[in-house]
Length: 67
Image 1 (cartoon, one colour):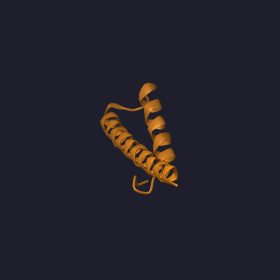
Image 2 (cartoon, rainbow, N blue to C red; image 1 turned 90 degrees about the vertical axis):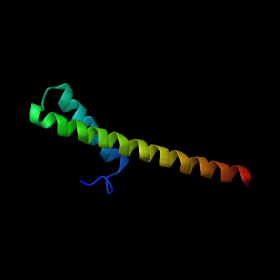
Image 3 (cartoon, rainbow, N blue to C red; image 1 turned 120 degrees about the vertical axis):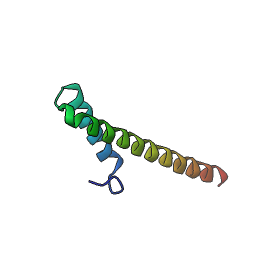
C-alpha cells in the first residue's frame, strides 16, 4: 500500500504491527532494518497528517470566531 493513498488509521495500524513484531522478536536480522525504516516513514507520515489536520482545525475555529 502506498503512503499517498494510506489513511492515518491504516498507517497507525501498520506501525502497531511493526512494533509488535519487533517487541516479540518476530523479525529476522535481515528484516529488522527495512522494518525500522518503514516505521520511521510511517511516523513521519502520521506527524504530517496530524499537523495538517491541526492547521485545518485552527483555520475553521478562527473562521467561526469571526462570524
